[in-house]
Length: 125
Image 1 (tube, rainbow, N blue to C red):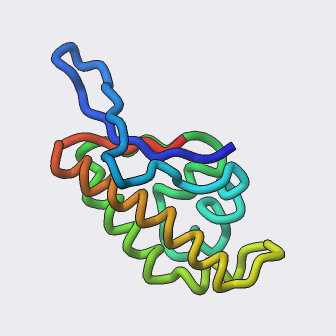
Image 2 (cartoon, rainbow, N blue to C red):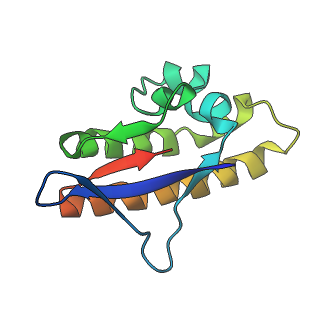
C-alpha cells in the first residue's frame, strides 16, 4: 500500500470535501513502511518535525490554519534529504532513496501549496 496526500476544503455545511490531484501532479506520499522508516524516523524527529512523525501511528490531518507551518516543515525535510536517506534502512543506494523521498516531498509540497491557496487543509493517509 501507498500513502496518499490529499487537499481538503470545507463545504457549506462544514463537511470536509477532498479534492482530486490536479492533472500532471501525483498524490503519492510514500510507501506504507515509510510511516516509521522515514516520516516517523528518529532522523526526522531530531530535525524538530512535528507533523510528519504523526504518521508513525495514524494519518496526518493538517488544519488550514497549520498549512503554513506544514509547508515550512516540508522545506526543512527537503533541506535534509541526504541525512534522512542515509539513515534509512533499505537495500537501495542512498542516492536512490534520496530521489524517492524528494519525489514524494514534492508531491506533498504541491498539495500543501494548493491547500494554502484554497484555504484548505492537507491529509496524508
